[in-house]
Length: 231
Image (cartoon, rainbow, N blue to C red; front, side, top):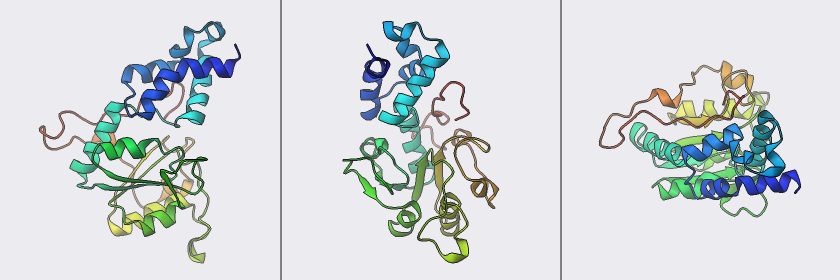
């Protein structure tokens, strides 16, 4: 059995769960460690780190950069509605748009956008990030794994040298629109230097404890991390 097919079969159950918004913490742990592939003969003889990296590469190409568990999606929905009092979310750089349907099932008016949506994905609106937050009236903006964005082609000449992620945050900050993103911290793979150097601070979502135990009973559940990465 070829390795790509073996990896696809090893991840099939978890991938189906993730696309349905039902990925468990246990499945995420098996994916991030590479253990999900260990039971397959073609993969078991590979070093653990190589198995984990193959799983991560497959997951990023077929599902998402991130391991969006059901528990995390519940936390995010509660954070958005309870902490920020928002329901209208515009997701920029949506890629495969895996969160759109499942976050709408959690009661959010969630619109996923991307300059280049995945082929055949009619659920993702074709729009650049800055244009989307200007035009779609979000109450909150979300993105994940937007790696080193360049300046927006449609931005004003005065800010043409500013990467688009910093432009998006600046636009939202001036209008009081919260921004939530998932990626690596400063020095990692996501976020331009301008984003991290801007006149604002990134605060881990896990630091928020929602105010009412009747709405949410614990601190924010973080996104499970891929082993060896500082997601």
